[in-house]
Amino acid sequence: MADFMDNIPSISQPLIRWYEQNKRELPWRETKDPYIIWISEIILQQTRVVQGYDYFVRFVSRFPDVKVLAEASEDEVMKYWEGLGYYSRARNLHAAAKQIMADFGGKFPDTYTGILSLKGVGEYTAAAICSFSYDMPFAVLDGNVYRVLSRLFALETPIDSSVGKKQFSELAGILLDRKHAAIYNQAIMELGALQCMPRSPKCEGCPLSDKCMARARNEMEKYPVKQGKTVVKPRYFNYLHISFGDITWIHRRTANDIWRNLYEFVLIETDRDVTFEQLQENIFYCNLMDGVGRIELKGFPIVRKHVLSHRIIYARFYTLSIERELPETEDYIRVPAGHLSDYAFSRLTLDYLDEINRQKLDNTLF
DNA sequence: TATACGTGGTC
DNA sequence: TGACCAAGTAT
Image 1 (cartoon, rainbow, N blue to C red):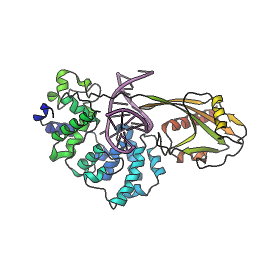
Image 2: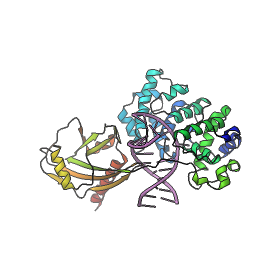
Image 3: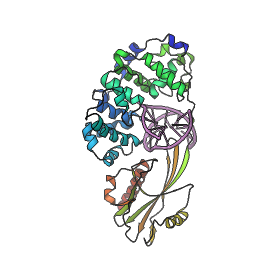
Image 4: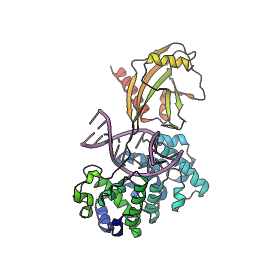
C-alpha cells in the first residue's frame, strides 16, 4: 500500500469536537434502535436529508418495528415510498423484514455478517448499523467519506475503480477511532455533508484544513477523482389514460425494469418519438382496444421530459374516453378515479395526475 | 467491471 | 441547460 499510510495523523479528536458543535439534530440520531437506524440508512441512500426526512417520519410512524413492517402488504410499503425513488429499497426493506422474522426470530441481527445478509444492505449500510447501533468498530465508506479522504490525502485513485475502493476502504479502517466508532463515523460523514461539500467546500471552519493536502494545493474541487462517465439513454413512453365513465385502467409494472411494482396507465413504449396517429396503428395492432367503440381524445396530450440519472424518458400522456366497458384482464385492473390515490405511482405519473386535476379545477372555476 | 436503478438540487 | 451530485446496492 502507498507510503503515506505509514504515517497517518489522528483526526478523531478535532473531528468529534467539530461534530459536537455543528451536527444537525436528526431523529435517527436520538436512538440506538437498529430498526430505526436501518430505516434511516436505507432512506438516505443516494438521498439528501431534506428529501428523505418526511418519508422517514411517516414510515416509522406507520411501521414502528420489524414485525409491523413484515406483516404489511408490499403495496402499502410501496405507497409509503411513492415519489422517493430507487424503489428497490422499499421492496428490499419489506423482504428483509420478513427475512428477520423468519431467520432471526424477529430480533434484529446484531452481527456484521447477519446484518449484511439482509436484502438491500451492502457494506456501507452494514457498517453504519453496526457502529451507530452497537458501537462496533466498522468504518463507514460512503460518498462523504470518499470525498473527505481523497481531499485530505490528495488521493487520485478513482473511487469507482476496484483499486480505489480497496485503498479507501483500508485507509478508512486505519483512521477509524475504534473506541468511538459511532460518533467518529457520524462525524466524518457530517463533515462531508456540511463542510467538505462537492463544490465550494467551506475550508474555513474545517477542523482538518491544516492537515488537508488538497487544501494546501488549492485543488479541492479536483477530488474525488472518478473514471466513469454516465451515458444518458432515451426511452419513449406513450401513456393511454383510458376512462369509461368514472372507471380508469391501470397496470402494475412487474418486469425487472424502472418503477418495478409501481402502477401506471396503459403504456406503449416505442423506440422513437411517435404521433398519436402512428400510435393508433400500434394500438389496434396490439388488439389492446378491440371492440371499445369510438375513442375520444380529450384535449392535447400532456408531454413530459423526465430526466433520470442515466436515462431520459420522453413521455406523452393521452387522456382518452371510450364508449364501451373494457374487461378486466390479468394485466389491467379497473379503478374508480377517486381511488387512484390508493396505488403507488412514479413521480412522472403523479405529475401528470396533478396536471389534469389542475385542469379540472380550472374548468370548475371559470 | 459496468450498468441499472429515481428524484431533486445546483451551477 | 446539460452535467454532476446525494448517507449505495444488485446483477
